[in-house]
Image 1 (tube, rainbow, N blue to C red):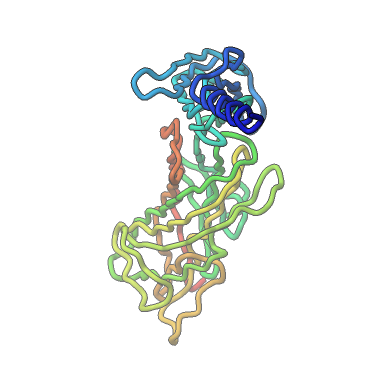
Image 2 (image 1 turned 180 degrees about the vertical axis):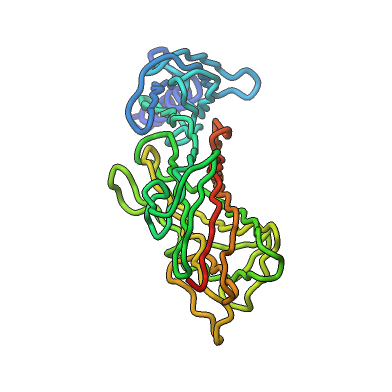
Amino acid sequence: MKTKIFSIWSVLLILIVSIAVVVPGCGDGACTGDIEVRATLCDALWEGDVVYKLTGPGATAPTIIDGTSVNATHSGVDCGDWTCEYVSGGPPGAYLESITPDSTQDVTSGSTKTFTLNFELEQDAWIECLGWTIDGVPIEEYQYAEFFEGAWYAEVLPCQIIDAHFVQGVYGCEGRVVSVNETSWLHITDLNPPGLCWIYVVNEDCAVNKTAEPPALPPEKVSQTTTIDGVTVGPGGEPIPLSPQMSLDVETIWELVKEIDYEKSINWLGISVFPFEPPVVPHPCVLFELLLPPDPGPYVFQLVAEAEVELMDDEDVNTQNNNAICLAPLFLTVLVGI
């Protein structure tokens, strides 16, 4: 008799457990969790108006939550995958850089998932011409230079170095590092009889430099390439005849820090008398050597300096300030045999 009663109770217990598995109990709640939406601007927390959309689970009729500001908390959302999509708005003058830790997250029972909209200030690379220097002396202070009718006139001797200086930077989130591709040109017009002068390619790395203001870690130069009239030329080799008009170029790539002003100096030309006994021994830290005949001069050239900057893999919101031309050309007279 006890055995039969035990068997009946066992069957009833199994049925009760089975029913409990198949049919949810009246006291059981649905699976829910919470979603928080936050925002940062230049890595600092930011609050304000921003339009975003949260899309929840459901293949045929997913749950949609339209958000209009941050910081915001959406409580009691269904469990499952939720996706956060940026629509519009946010900090003025900024753009969405990323959504972290991921734009899609799995909400589990009782959990809180956070979507962070990360904004960065719009980036703007810019450059301006500062002017010419001779042997590092600003043209305004150089003893043998004068400004006349919108141009500089200067007298130099062989062994001197002609430089151009620019100031540049990238606006955006302070302290962020950005890659900048830079091309600089020295447009040279030979005002002498053709066939007298030559160009020798030096391309020493120290010929193109930057200093930071305020003082900061030195910028990193990634590469430096010289070209003549757009054709890449390596250092050394044979001197190249100077055409009546020629563009001496240098292309560099830099890693710069945003919101820092950099002064860029380019030692374009060392001046020497040609011919040399081979090999040519150029000035240190120059891009090109201007080789003059040994016959008494003077020899006259017109120089125009130009530079351009371009963000690499980043959007530039204002490309109108990416190019700078030193509007006052330099008429250079080289005195030989004096």
